[in-house]
Length: 80
Image (tube, rainbow, N blue to C red):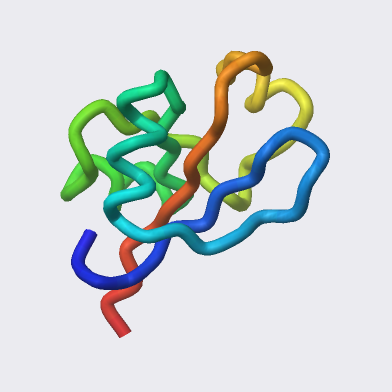
């Protein structure tokens, strides 16, 4: 993940950037890790344990894969 932050959204709050250490803590507490890039990019490289929910395909049905009782950490690799 490098030194860049990761966007997370806590129930009823706006997304915020968190540090890598905070991501590790959240994952240790059972947070879900979600890669939002297209499937091909997810297949090329993703963090261990991450699931793929492409941003362009997010809808009411696709997010049913997520556990509403657990925090969600979303990320994407930005190679720019």
